Image (tube, rainbow, N blue to C red; front, side, top):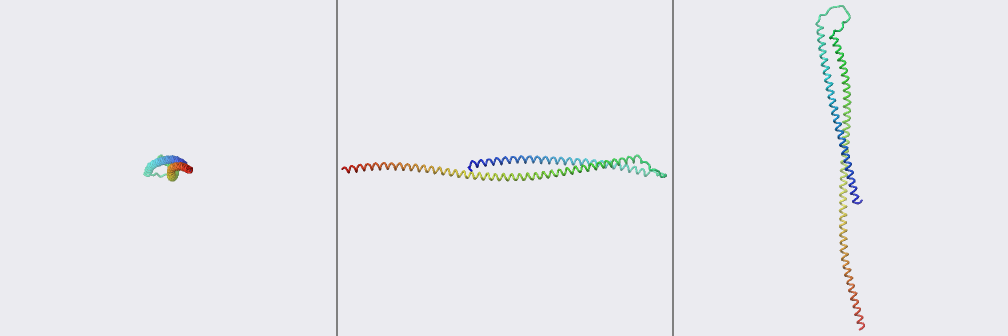
Length: 234
């Protein structure tokens, strides 16, 4: 792989890592918003539950106070009846209840019916509250699991990003080392070429000097031969 291809691969990996980190950050923000909304809904449900419980408790106290009033009235009526003279008479059919006792009986029946209705409403309300609490607990458990998963995903992402950063740094260091080695090789090659050029220039100068010497030698040799010819003629 050439240095240019390595740089392109590093840039591509850094781009993918940044896109992945951005997507995961968006998912984390959306999950945190959902957790916040669920927590707000849980708080609102708790507030509604407490308000309903307070209202039911107030109704129960009001009914108990009304029952106490009617029981006090009944006690007074019974006391008045005990103080009245008892008339001896032959056994006869039971007399009809007096108007206050009839009213008290009707009030008691109404109160009993109201209390039964209230107990039924309370039981239904307790069932709804239990269901709401179970649902809120389930949602809280789900949110806790989602938070745990989010923390695990965040840890994995951070570890992956750190590993990729370390790999990128290692590759960058290796690329820088290769670049320095190539630069050193290029510098050495340039020095070698410069040295070869200097040696070539020196060699050409030596060859030119040698050629000059050969020309001078040939000229002297020619002159010597001419002298020897002249001497031979003489």
